[in-house]
Amino acid sequence: MEALFLIVRGKGLWLSVGLLVLFLSWESMVPFFGFFQHKLTKRTIHGVRNLLLGALNAVLISLVFVAAWLWVAEFAYQKQFGLLYWIGPPEWVHAFGAIALFDFWTYWWHRMNHEIPFLWRFHRVHHSDPLMDVTTANRFHIGEIFFSSLFRIPLILLFGAQLWHLAVYELLLFPVVQFHHANIGLPNGLDRILRCLIVTPAMHKVHHSDFPTETNSNYTSLFSLWDRLFGSFRLRANVHSVHFGLEGYDQADRQTLVGLLKTPVDD
Image (cartoon, rainbow, N blue to C red; front, side):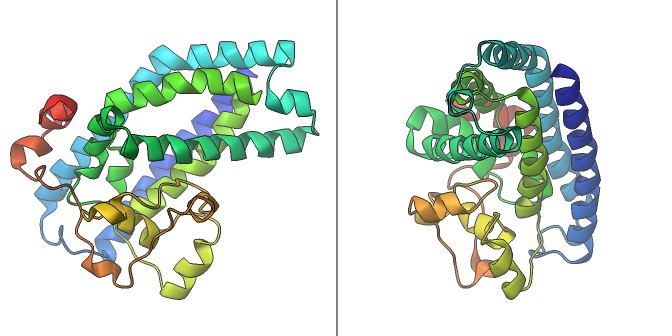
């Protein structure tokens, strides 16, 4: 189980790096918003800052949580404990069910980060980016990653998930998250088709709007059906009119790495 998890996770890392290069190139050639045109230094500082946050979070997960996830998944397997073991579906159904349950949880976790003031203090680091691009997919406060990783421990047990299920879920999730954060646009017809299944750039640009009604919508990260099922799906006819960021967080000192790390306690 551990070996398969590490193999899938490793492939996911290389896929994410490859897609980062792809989307950075796409953004450079055909940007949806022109806020980085002829501003290479500004774009580099913005991107490096966001990627440093992502690297910090990756170190936290590797050093603190992967071993705990492995242990609880192995315990669930040995004891045949958890929802999917109790139902006893075929292995492929078990895997698909685990992926669906992880994404269902991700939707509600994201929604709680908007609706619970304590969690919002950390999550607003992600939403305070006034220049959303593919690197924003890495811009999360280490406190948010700590709590989300901590909650995964009982969830793996309760779901009866194997750890390679989580790795496959992340292998599907991370490319889609990079895709819908990227500063790109799709033809309306293609975006409409894709958002029947996954989150698209048009959907997620609305979520990063500084207009609160739009900020508090489109919570899902992978499969778009959760927003439709739970009444949080929202679109804007003219996505080019969306303004990113949060009121009061555009100041230069709040956009530094130190400023981002201080955001939860900086009112």
